[in-house]
Image 1 (cartoon, rainbow, N blue to C red):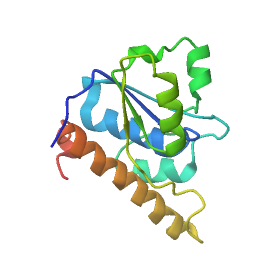
Image 2 (cartoon, helix red, strand yellow; image 1 turned 90 degrees about the vertical axis):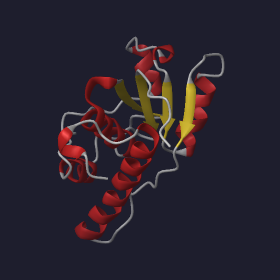
Image 3 (cartoon, rainbow, N blue to C red; image 1 turned 90 degrees about the horizontal axis):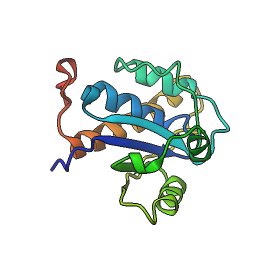
Image 4 (cartoon, rainbow, N blue to C red; image 1 turned 60 degrees about the vertical axis):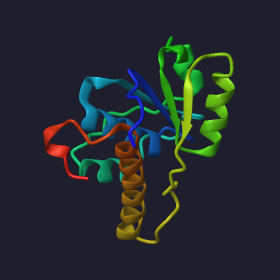
Length: 157
């Protein structure tokens, strides 16, 4: 059953290079400008992952220009966590960091246990299959939480 739709949403994971950028891109694709959406990592020591770019592009989501950033960089650049209604953590480490940073704020933090596909698969096709599985986990959780996509070309479930 879909929950309340946030006006602003932050997805977070470990490095902001796979799971959270995919989630940010899917959210924007499926729900348009219905919510302000960003993503962040506990650390930003990796750039956007090429396999994440490839599997997102299969659904019409362009991530090539994504630049990874951390919670600390977000704050340094003037983005305030209090501007978000909801933070969705996609990894245990990002959940801990989000809860730590919001303990005195009225921001909901949800945890979606999404598989980390990095390091899985022996060849390109096996790696792509693992990344697709992660993308599809995010997609399914997103639709379950926020309802069917509002963009006409994404009505399939």
